[in-house]
Image (tube, rainbow, N blue to C red):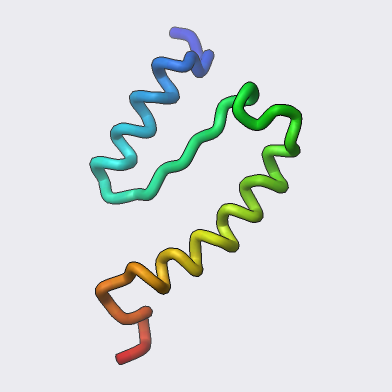
Length: 64
């Protein structure tokens, strides 16, 4: 059995995670166009918290 992560395996994993309630965002190396994936990820996490605070329908844990 191979541990190679093909595009179809990545897609299947993302779909499974979405079905479990996770927010999943993936950019391919081509879409990144040379941008450092770690830097993009860090920035998306920062922006994601703002988006969550805006769209959340429940208080943060320990609030409210």
